[in-house]
Length: 314
Image (cartoon, rainbow, N blue to C red; front, top):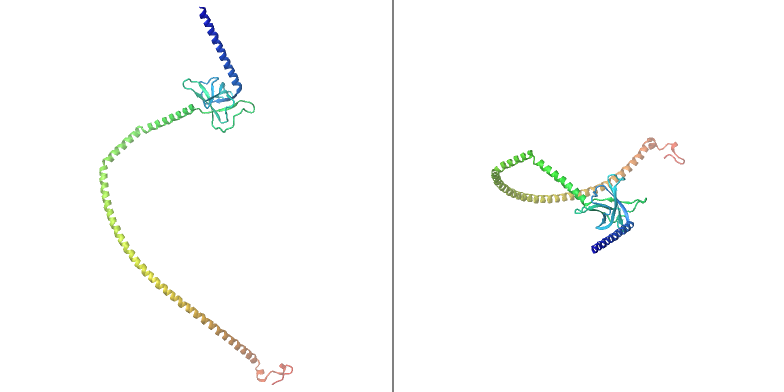
């Protein structure tokens, strides 16, 4: 009994020592990570936090960068859950960073995933009052899938409703009437095809008549074209004769104009000479008229009263 009791005591001591070492390591790691991590918080309003626990992982691009410290129902923002967590220094937490809840469907455990919408966004820093920086809530793939499923279900429901409206009793009766009318129409299809054949034959004969009429019109057009060509030649000859006549008339008019100019020049000279003769004759008449104003002086000479000094009667 003593060897078994000794082995049991030794095993218990070894297990206790290992538990103490593990607890020390966990405590040291938690203390160190608490001092080296930057605190952040998120207000979750749309996503479920089922499976999220204290010390749950905080990941970015699949790498564990922190852990959850606490969560509570927020009094500052009613209807939300405030989750506080720490992130390792050097983690690129930006103003465009969004926090989403990822959940393992097998184990049911959840963690927080950080994703940056843009990498050129400025870093997210604490406020001027020293309050913890707040990361905005993002949209998880599960939420997007749920929204897509809901939209798909709504569209499927709308489609089924439209199908039911289409297959109503009234539409089914109308569809049956349409089929009956199609059946009646197909029965008279043979007669319609026969009439169509006769119409095609008539159209063929009409096309032959039109072809013959076109040939006659073509021959008449050729004859008219020949006549118009002859008329054109005659008109061209007449135009040439007319042009020659016009040129001759123009030459005759030019000669007449030159002769009229020469006649006007001669007439002008003669008129000038005649005017000069008339002026001389008018001067002579004026002198004679002055003499005839005093007939006594003409007959008996000027009177003694009109004689100047040294003048005497003739």
